[in-house]
Image (tube, rainbow, N blue to C red):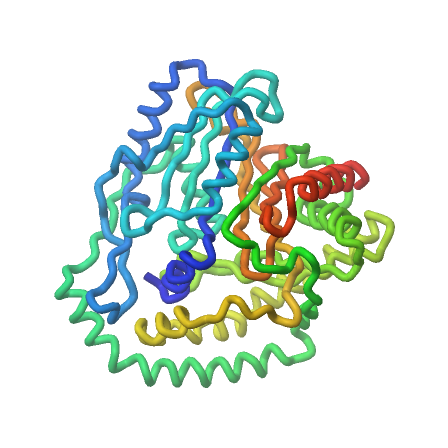
Length: 424
């Protein structure tokens, strides 16, 4: 396991961060039992997901992914009374995480859901839960498409070495760790010098903490707004339109114009890491009244931060932990004090945007209506947003802590966000 992925797993008990990819389909034309059987068969063919994490004895090296046999409880069926009830159940799921020593994923099925958006008939909703140590948002979306389309070629899962083999590898790797760490440190110093060059865009300044920048506690609440992509594209791309609307709603809700969003930016894969993105701060320019002018300012800032995030020196700087011995990185990770609030944050909220491709998915004869996702909360972010599109339909999701934002407050914020989308 790549050190950055292992670190996510080690932090998982303290900061639940599983990914949840929701796909809503029209009701199937066949009995639900047939749909369930088909999905189970597809899972059995996808060796890529038939793995679990195994620890190296004594924690002397980073964990491995190894093959496992599919199990019945990989797929869970939930009976709900309607879409609102589904969101309540999902709120509870988002607060937890999968046990990666058993499986890095779980599939949740909600058959016959009345009141689902973008349709009049009951829907079939599929939620693919994935450990962040196993996949990022883009990878999770790709795996979900492979599963739901049934087009993934059969693959064989990797097998980890024996316990003795793991210890031998750890012993062989350890002597080379220290010189590599020293070399990585020297490269990082040079990378910082490159990033200080005036031609490289500067990072967006951190923002002071606001009401939603506090410890979220253990509970979660999720909400969704389904709209047409054209509504967001009135002022630019879907991502820019969403940022523009979120900035407007958040400024009105919090009563401040000084706000930024933390936005994950996809970057080139690094070695065996299953997460290929960097978070950047994007000024929401809430003080600009005209939506089109505000969107243009946001788009320019986002473009600058993407350029910085994808600069080769950023990749060099990110490699500083790649050769740190596992026990040492685990020691530091376990002792991180997550209760200390920083003076500023990269973003007052998170906005994660993923395009999940064309709306050509069909399950049991029912066509896909919309898709959604729910970025996790952090020790200083009690409100996050997802922007997930499939075809010409986009869902803006809101994940919040009810201990920071009560249900009435959340309802008011969602209404403000809906109004801001309409005003673009």
